[in-house]
Image (cartoon, rainbow, N blue to C red; front, side, top):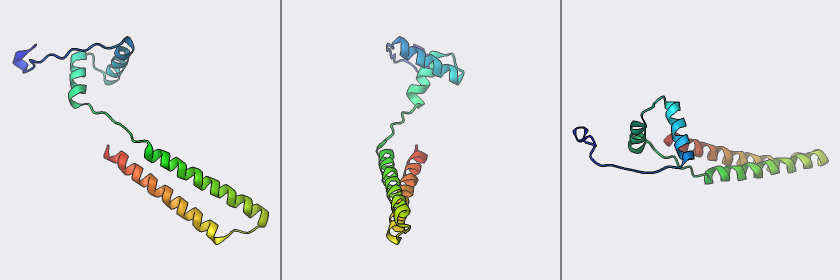
Length: 112
C-alpha cells in the first residue's frame, strides 16, 4: 500500500475469466491499461443504472390496446362505411394516454 497517497486499506476480490474479459474490453474502450486505476475509478465514481421496465411494459400494453381499437374501427368502417364520433374520441383518449406515458418515461430517462 502507498501510505503517502493516503491509500492504506486493501480490497481484494477474484473474478471469473469471463468477467476479466469484460473488464478488459471496457478498459480498452476507455483507452486505459492501468487496471488498478480503472477499478478504483469505477468503484468510487462509477454508477449503476437499474431500469424499472414497468413503465415500458405499461406503454406496450396501451399501444396494443389502441392498435386493437384501430383494427376494430377499421373493420367496422369497411363493413358499414360509417365512422362514429365515439370511436374517434376513444382513439384520441388512447393516444393521449400513450403520449403522456412516453413523456413521463422520457423525463425519467433525463433524470438518469
